[in-house]
Length: 129
Image 1 (cartoon, rainbow, N blue to C red):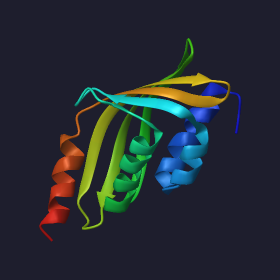
Image 2 (image 1 turned 90 degrees about the vertical axis):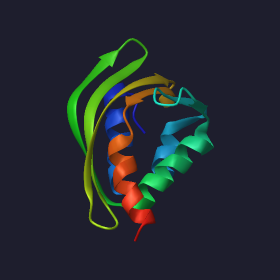
Image 3 (image 1 turned 45 degrees about the vertical axis):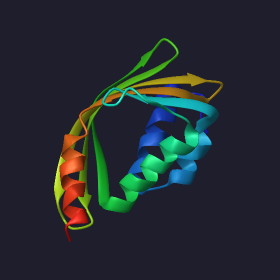
Image 4 (image 1 turned 180 degrees about the horizontal axis):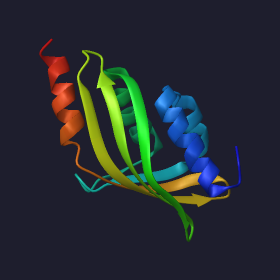
């Protein structure tokens, strides 16, 4: 684990790309809150990791194209496009923005701005196969 905020977010994103949910867990504070704009819900660590588990289970490949990653007061702002391939071979690209708050070397809050339509459409194919 690193004390550099940018490196911490890089490590978290790389872990998601590899499907390493346990590493992500170790980077999250036990009291993390992950909020998403598309439903306005705040999720705790277990709920957030459960969503990551789902993403990993329905994809064979995940790649983050980083558009911008900058340090901000208390954390990091990241704009990216998540590119993925589902287990049935459908590809998707989902633009997103994360505001990641970090305290004492752990991620304490993520505010996530995205439109889940791309992954939802790709995952819908999984239910019909």
